[in-house]
Image 1 (spheres, rainbow, N blue to C red):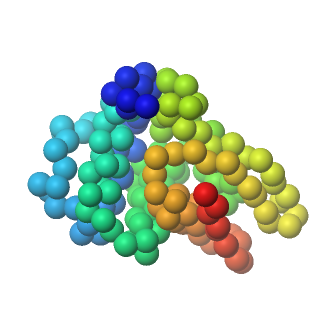
Image 2 (cartoon, rainbow, N blue to C red; image 1 turned 135 degrees about the vertical axis):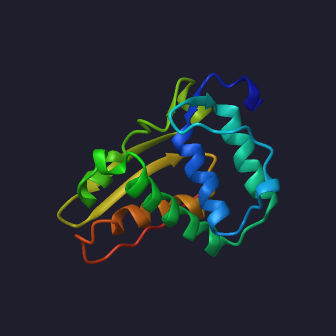
Length: 163
């Protein structure tokens, strides 16, 4: 699929978060990305998100670093972005992932991705999602893990990714 023809948009806050995460982890240099100035309050073509991911891929970060990037990103999203207004517990976090609200909009699910909860047993503490995104699996794993650890209101977290 030609990503320049995708009609969707991505939140500037999401783009800034991803970019800053990889800068802070010393994966990217300022000259490593040829991106315009990003305003976190604006929406940008989805193709810019794909270009950003492709630039990160060229830096070839390790899987451990990608996992840490996911954790760092979700902590920044919660502490400095809209997170505190959206979630107040791990249970809120688990349910918030059953949509991509506030991150991407427009375009079809097949073009811009999605996250659907397929199974949830609150008593056993098991949630299963189908998550389709151009982000690396280890980043997604770190995001889900980090989101479950933000509130320190559960005893154990294990996040597995299956491709």
